[in-house]
Image 1 (spheres, rainbow over the protein chains, first blue to last red):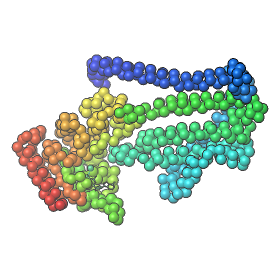
Image 2: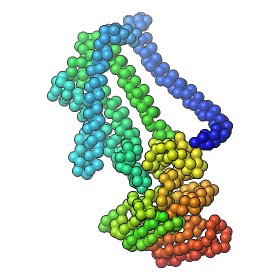
Image 3: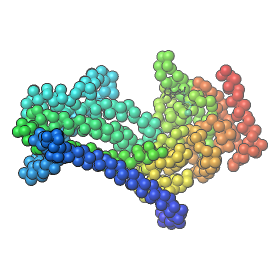
Image 4: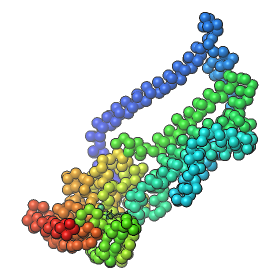
Amino acid sequence: MTTTETDSATTETPPAARVTEEELARKARRSELTSRWFWRILSYVAVLAIWEFALLDIFSFLRGSPLDPKLLPGPSEVVATFFEIWGEGTMPAAFQATLTRIAVGFGLSFLIGAMIGILMQSKWFEGFFKDAVLISLSAPGLIWVLITAIIFGNRPLGPTIAIILTTFALVTVNVSEGIRALPKDLIDMAKSFQVNVFKRNRQIVIPHLAPYLFTGLRFGFSIAWKVTVLTEVFSSSAGIGFEMRISAVLFDMSEFLTWILAFFFFALFLEKVVLEAIERRYFRWRQAVTAT
Amino acid sequence: MAEIRIKNLHKEFGVGDDKVVALEDVNLDISGHSFVSIVGPSGCGKSTLLNILTGIETPTNGTVEITSDGHVAAPGYVFQAARLLPWRTVTDNLLFVQEDRSEGTKERCQRYLEMVQLGDKGDKFPGELSGGMQQRVGIARAFSIEPDVLFMDEPFSHLDAITARALRRELHHMWDETKKMVVFVTHDVGEAVELSNRILVFAKGGRLEDDIQIDLPFPRDPADDEVAVAKAHVLRKFEELDLLAS
Ligand SMILES: Nc1ncnc2c1ncn2[C@@H]1O[C@H](COP(=O)(O)OP(=O)(O)O)[C@@H](O)[C@H]1O
Ligand SMILES: [Mg+2]
């Protein structure tokens, strides 16, 4: 071991040039990222500015502002309301209710979807599930939301079933595709080296399926949260959708918008920051593949 | 000492109209410190034979037995394509086929990576390496388990001439030093004559047509008269088989 260490220490000088090259590339990447984020954030600022501006009472020739602040309050007012609601403590409770629903519903949906994906490798089960998968993929989520709201009222089973019906097929399709693309050449290689079946599954089958599962997770999640909020608007007595319904019924537009914005930013955070971080962390090898 | 015994080996793929006979009634014994090359046109069952010998495929009929001093021999296999796990680093790809992850094992893996000139690439993912480098990792992997029998399926066919030459020499040294058995598939007759003391010629339809001993001393220089004569002899066999086939 010591010999190899001194070996690598003596050959350390030439890679120094490469390090600076790598650093330059990293710097270029970072500055590109910064400018991309700048433009992205600028689009939000622009929309908010136009919105606020349209509400100002400066268009005397139009007899008042183009938008009625009672019907559409401006961003500044919404932000003020946001902190007001936050102070009351209703927001964390509502988020918790909604998130619990998503976690339970989508968790079950993921398991069921994956199971069906595995079963569909058999011809008979493929015939059995094929149309169900197709219908789930193509029917608009609103249909399931309405049906489950009618059947289950505000019992928790309603949203759970709506989430399952709208998202299981996305997981099924991805799992099926992953299984069909199993790398036979790698499994054969492992067999010839007498690697046992557990190690083969852990180190070949699961890492191979992981990106497919992850794609199912991402798409499924992006639908699951919309469906969840929608079910809460129609039925249920807690959660973000419920709060939206209450403020709409009370005609409190500022509060209504606050809830919408809060959830929008929250979903954006989960999809863009959390899921993308997971992807970067666990799928580094894929970047290596696509880079070359 | 390793020993391979193949009796009445027959292998078909598919049924009915899709039926393909890959190997037909092959009888063969290989023993001891042999370097056996298998040559023949593409589709004559060379890869299938190695796949059966390494347990990837099962015979339709007949038996194969690979033993080493009375116990089941451990095979190492170098494929035509590298077959590395893309989600594991180079070092982890070697460790994947080991029985344990002890310090001794890790050092051995590192030693074989250095043998193929990839000692500093252990932390890379296969996707970050060139095709030739990936193939060398596949070679290091097979060597690293220090197998009783080393099977190689056209291992150098995708490499550049200089790398292939260096690795051929390395392979010969390893065979010479460890006294292990090597079964080597190639379609390059020159390569077969340079490395082996026995050449098996397969024909279309998976029949073993010829079994040629080459008892020239190593290292063999392709420019050497005797080596050239041996090569010409094998090539002539090839042409005869080609004529028979057409
Ligand atoms: N898994 C398989 N399924 C069907 N046919 C196969 C399979 N593997 C090999 N064959 C057929 O068997 C014959 C021998 O193939 P192979 O052993 O790969 O030949 P070689 O390695 O000599 O080029 C070919 O006709 C090939 O098409
Ligand atoms: Mg082949």
